[in-house]
Length: 138
Image (cartoon, rainbow, N blue to C red; front, side):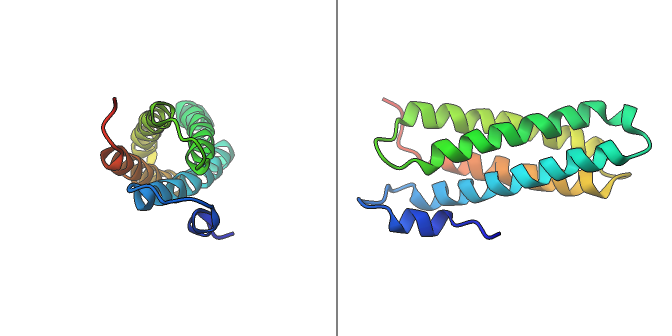
């Protein structure tokens, strides 16, 4: 299923914020990260060495929850509260970084962890770019 963030943004009434492109990219990466983490958690649970993957599974379960919440907040274009938006994006950065770090520990042995780590890093990067594109607080 393709991400429709751009279509939805283009169909919304009103003006586009200056940070619209970074916002759309961040939404798309959050959706991809949600899917990759959910799939990685499932794959980890099917591995014979599941005990060594418990922390990885935990990170894989936490990260998509944060990505889903961030996606929801970023997708709401009416009366945006930049303080809340920033907090969500910062939480997403933290969660993606933690998940990527853990998955990278297992990437040499599990392809799903390697892929998940890459997707988490892309999401982390997109979130950082969005923070940079937002107007300064205050």
